[in-house]
Image 1: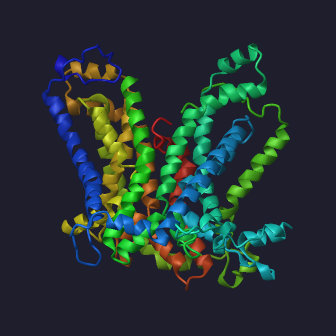
Image 2: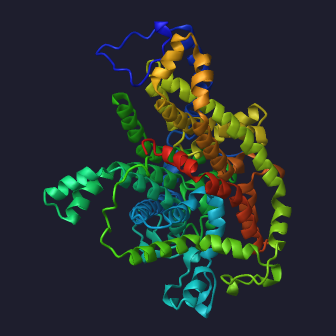
Image 3: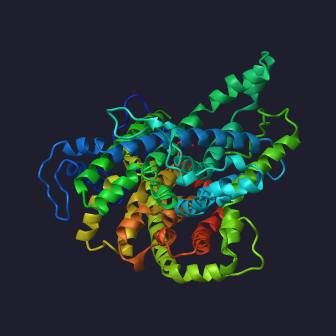
Length: 337
Length: 284
C-alpha cells in the first residue's frame, strides 16, 4: 500500500528524497500523461525546431528548397525597411500599451476598492472588453477612430463626438495619420526607417488598452485586498504619514502583481496580430505594421517561406526573453513552497 | 483570489469626497461603453438611416435589416464555430483534468520541469509553429478541415487547461487522496471517486476559458481553414469588415453577433471567467 500513495506537494520533504519506485499506478499515471507530453513535444518544441531550421534555408517559392543559407535570411530581414519599421512599432506599441494598461488598471482598482455602491456594476463594465475577440474590438474601434473629412468640417467617429462636445481642437487623423512624432521622425544614415512615434499607433494602443485594462484592474484589486490591515496600522502607530504608508507599505506589496501583469501584457503585445489586422491592416503605409503581420504576409501571400520563418524566430526570441526567466522563477518558487 | 472575505478598508483616496469618486467612476464607465453603444445603435438602424454624420445619434425606430444581412453572409460561420468550439472545449477539459490530476497528485521526478516545459507552450507566438503545423496537418489529411482546427486548439490548449486544473487540485487535501488509496482505490479509482466529484468548479473555469478563447481566436482559423465555407466567425467577420461592398452597419451587426456568446457567458458566469483569466498570470 505504501508505495501506491500519491506524492503530494505538502509532504514534508526530508533531506534525502524518498526513493521513487515505479508501481502499477504510477506507470498508469505516466502513460496517461504521455499523450499530452508527446503532443507538446511535437507541436511546440518540434515545430519550433522545424521553423528554426527552415529559417536557415533558401526556401522561397511554392516548392520547398532546403539548401543551407546560413544566417542570410536574418541579415536580409534586419536590413529591410519594413522589418525595421515593425521593430520600431513593436517597441512603441509595447511600451505605451503596457504602461497605460498598468496605470489605468491601478487607477480603476483603487476606485473600485472604495466601497462604493454598485461596485459590481462598475467592475463588470471595466472588465467586459476582456471577453470580446480582438476582431470585434478592431471592427468597432476602426469606426470610432475613422476621422472623416474633419479638416473641411465633415468629421466622423470620435472627431464628430469631439466637435459636438465643443472639443474641436482634439480632432485628428487617427488611424489615417501617417506622420511620425516628433517632427517626422529621426532618419539617420544607418536606419531604413524613421525612428519616432507613428501617430496612427495611438488609436491602436487605445483599443488594446480598452480591452486589457480590466485585467490589470482585477489583478490590482485582488492585490490591494490581500494587504492585511495590521501592516498599515503598525506603520501608522509608528508615525508614518498617509503618503508614506502608500509609498512604503502598499506599493511594495503590489510589486509581484505588477510583475505578473507586465509579463502577461508584454507577451500579448509582442504577439499582437488580430487587432491590428482588423483595425488598420498595418497601415497607413507601414505605420502600424508589426512582425506578426509581416510574417503572415511574406510566408502565406508572397511564399518567402524562409524569411517568414526568420521573422517568426525573432518574435519567438523576443517573447522567450520575457517569459523564460518568469517561468523558471515560478518553478523554483513552486519547488520551495 | 479572495476578494470579498477580507475586511480591509480602502486606504488610498479614503479622504476624498464620495461625490468626486462617483463622478470619476461614472466617467470611466461611459468611456468604456462608447464602442458598445456605437455597435448597438448602428446595427439597429435601417439602411436609409445609416449616415456617418449622424453616427452617434440613436436610431428612430428599431430595424433588424443589418442583422438579417449580416446573418445571411455569416450564418455558416456560426455553425462552423460551434462545430469547432464545442468538441474542442470538451476534449480540452478532459485532457486538462487528467494532466492536472497527475501533475498534482502523482508527481514523479522532474514533474515540475515537465510542467514548466508544457507551460511554455501557452506563451509562444503561434507564428513560430504555423508553417510546420500546416505541413503536418496536410500530411495527416486534416488541413483545411474543422477536425484539423479542433486538434490544433486542443493541443495548444493543453498548457492553460493543465495549469488551471493542477492549481485547482493542489487545493484538494492530499489526506483525502491518501485515505482512498488505503481503501485500495488505484489511479482511476481515486480520480473517479475523489477528484472528479470535486472538480465541477474547475471544469466550469476551464470550459469557459476554452470556449471564450477558441471562439475569439483568429490566426489558426485564418490559416487552417482555407475554404470560405469552413471559416469560423472571427475570420468571417474580419472578411466582412475588409470588404468594400459591405455597409458599415452590417459590419457592426456582425461584430455584435460574434461578441454575443462570449459576452453572455461573461455576464452570467463572470466570476469563473475572471479565475481563468488570472490563471494566465501563473501566480495571480
